[in-house]
Image (cartoon, rainbow, N blue to C red; front, side, top):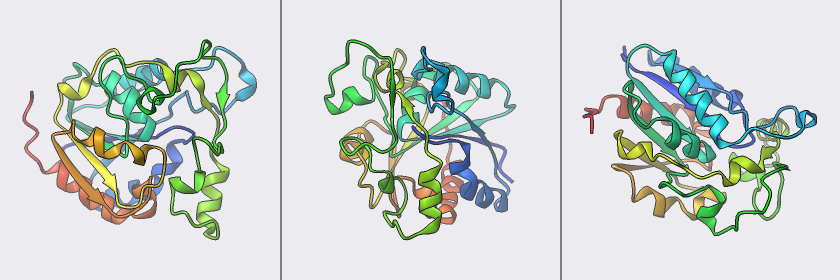
Length: 237
């Protein structure tokens, strides 16, 4: 039985539901897990401005960490790498951070800034999940539109705040906490274009089967990887 709790932090447009297959596999292995809902994935578009941004997400992550006793391993998927990087700096109960096809940023960097997208004059507004220039929702999962599970997952995606896309990191928590980067074999998402470069910042790199969300398409294999990471000697920095 592991003595760590895994805090699973979803990426843009998603919700806690995306972790359900992985949480079932972690439970079989006696591994405890928790999830959070990032407010920048906007479930109520009619709520109006100001929509929550990256700093709001980082606050939610910090609040979740404060409720967990004992060591925590944070798993950040895709966009979640940004608020997790902001949130874990100086947090003593985080013993490891796992960046899964995620944005592992330096101070002053933003998610879309990593791709050279200029910061707009206004950070108001929402970005839809389906955007031919930036997102192909099929790339999040298995690329198979004929898979009913894939279609159902795409239908659950919500808009993402522009504020979250461009707000910049003020604290690079991964410099203080042991960490790993996970690169899926078949990631055809926008994140996949920078993953190799970002992974060079990590203490160690793993490669796993699957597309942009390998824990969704290959939950058993991904749970095995997390169990392996859980068994590491998480020496403090």
